[in-house]
Image 1 (tube, one colour):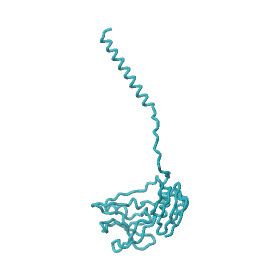
Image 2: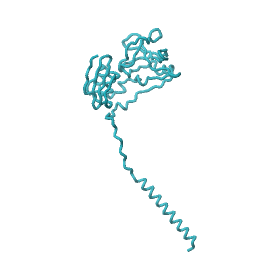
Image 3: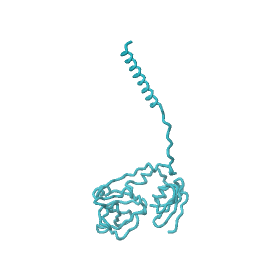
Length: 238
């Protein structure tokens, strides 16, 4: 056998061995299951519920005209209850010098117009609205003008859909308590906020496992939650 033939055979054998090794490596990779890595344990004790899957509609106006288009003629509900001041709207102007009180939790408003009005330190976008069973028109701020463009807070302060429909999985008795601005044992922290408005003080602890104090339109209430259920409800002195 010539030396050339021997070299060719050697190269062929080496090539076949290399192919076999490559095939073995790919086979092992395709059939090897990596041991699961330990997942970090969350420090939060909060448990996900159906509430967390509710996605309220959001809007993104960029000026007064687009805000008008999104809001005028629409019904909205106050998301940040007992936090937003409102003012009388008289003679096509908002009386910013005298507050007409705070908007209540989930208060239902009919938006009539959106205007720009100068205020201390700049210009504000004001939503004009009417209240059921209350005469006159009122206004509250929905945005501010900063560096030539408006920064709107509509999605943070308003619901654009009826919360009763968004959270229709809540029992009728829970909604009855919320509509009467009451919180009862067993209600969760979100329901408490819907009933009593924005909290003014919270203790240390995770959401749903802490003590929360609500201003509640001048009638403070302190509620202790455990496992995201109210366990104690204590009215405080005004």
